[in-house]
Length: 116
Image (cartoon, rainbow, N blue to C red; front, side, top):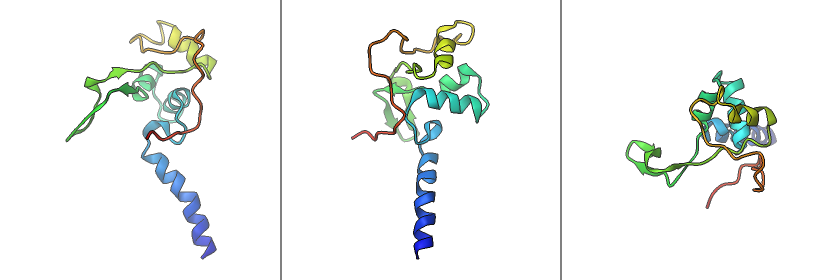
């Protein structure tokens, strides 16, 4: 019985992270972009597209519809290399919004916090 509980305790976080999309368990933008580039093979532009977050997302019978929402800037300040890529027009040709490195806003953490 104890072995079954151990297996369950190990598998539940892994299964839950599959449902969270490219963010996995970590909710940070930097970890999402890094994961999309490293594991999924996207370039920076594709990774930013994959990890984009929207405010005021509307749902429909087809799922999430980001067209009605405003694109939120990605907080990449915890990863200096990604921050530099966001600031460069060569690696960010679509001008994906990002939090400037000089921002006084608290850095986004790496811990997944469910919304109420």
